[in-house]
Image 1: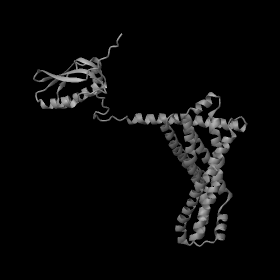
Image 2: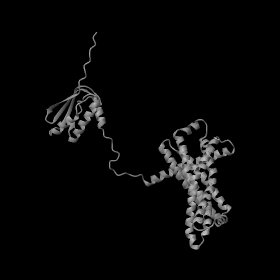
Image 3: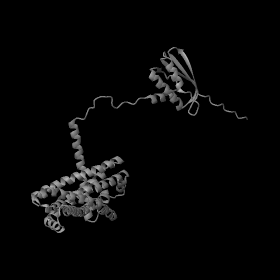
Image 4: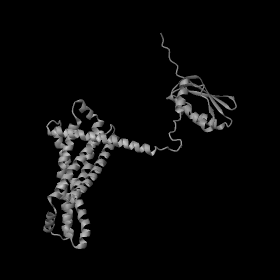
Length: 384
């Protein structure tokens, strides 16, 4: 049996018919598919522009053998030309699939903003929403603090489940690796305190008291506060980012599935490390701040080393040092709680992790300032 050869597909073609003066019929024939030699829509566009009496265009697709998106592209160009000339385009003669695709491609999405005045939410509604959100956040914070307290109780009884290697690693991150930035900031704070005090003390010829000003200022206030703010931006944010990323990767859910409490395994080592390291960082910041004041006093105001050392020793007392160290421990708790709380509250996207990190830093700094103000009032009332 001889094989019959298939005839090549008919090429795409168009011809025009004019049943009336104001009407043009476009007859489509052949294969209208990509890869074939398709007629140009510009030919019809020129004819539309050259006929001022044209008001209506129709199609005849009885001889159409096949089509794909090539035909749809051709028709969209014609439709745009008709829209510009305000000519009616009738698609009744097209295949049903072509008509649906043409209608879908020509659909105009609904405008979100139609120029109407934006109606804001009533102020009472906004206040109510903020109050509800504040109550919800306070409830979550109290629940987190309660869980942390339970975890510390288990730690004291030896029942807390966490890896000691994680604790050592976090202690290194919170302690030794934070020394460079703490050194820089503390020395600069000491320099600033010395220069600010010297401007006024010089008027009375009392430059020697620069040493007292720097020593008391650093040990009671600036050493603990600046170390805390540095750790809030450095370590508190890191805690929030780490725990938030674990939320995104569902690692915390995996720990819960395995029966491991995330509060003990993840939060407890971080809180414990920061609480242990903050008093040591505070003492180190005090020393660096006094060194900065020493550089200014000896280098710029002709105070001898012996005079500066003796004045510093006479000005300092154990209550001054203990107040700063105790405050630094409280600040460490606030930083650890804010960082871990925001990290555990983080959503499951990269944006939520960023929000959690920012919120951790802001929350920690606000709590630090509020706590320092309370300490100032309490120490003033107690006379210490």
